[in-house]
Length: 167
Picture 1 (cartoon, rainbow, N blue to C red):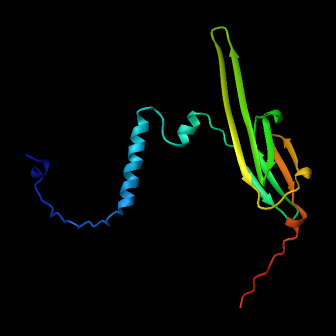
Picture 2: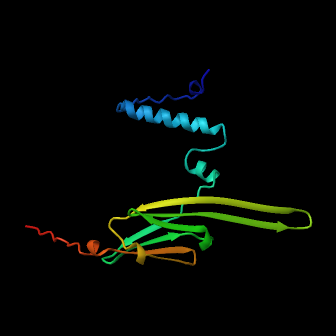
Picture 3: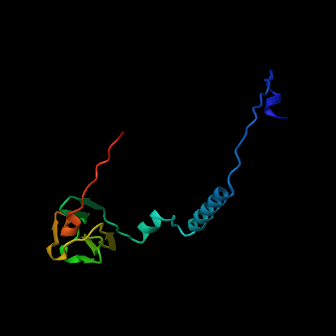
């Protein structure tokens, strides 16, 4: 006996037809592949992509690039790093910033001794939109922020802007 048989009144069941758009076969394939990868990584205790990178201690600093008429300025956030662990190079209009972050904490007590170490390296390559004077390039590291000033060449400075008129 079902519960609804015990209720003295019966409500009329109104059925509303539900229509669904058919999924495109590529959407179905993508959903199935995502589910397959999610299920695969569950067995290892590692979630795909972001958590996977965090588990392997991937470090990718934030970079801001600004351009003025005279120079290109690149600011990179590198908190907790020493300037000797940072390498900056410029070749064929590509600025490459790389480094290695090492951190070690030690905690001693009467009942325990704990040491934690973490390491992470990074490499960022930034294509430059125009020619720069490599011999006048400067890099300054202050309070965890690396600022690189790249003066433009004379050819890059003489670009002319064309105004757009409306009719």
